[in-house]
Length: 116
Image (cartoon, rainbow, N blue to C red):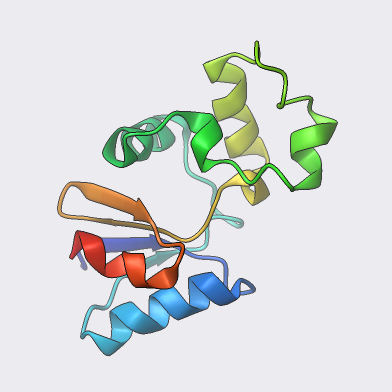
């Protein structure tokens, strides 16, 4: 099993480019199709800690659920933000690459190699 993981959305060009970059370097990551199998709150907490960010920094604020759920409100609790990410994984910024106790949002895709 690979020690590199990518939270991947095959419909996203940045996600496809990051995966291709990893593969071109001989890395066969564990591909997590997070829209089909969203991370748990516990896994999100782990990855947020590796990224060194709060939940809102991992959110795609332009997606419809962000506004529909009122997540832009400054008093939205951390628990509510995490729950929204799990229940509406389209809100998770992609791709996320995790390896060797580190994580990065690979935007631009070239950032994927930072954790190798």
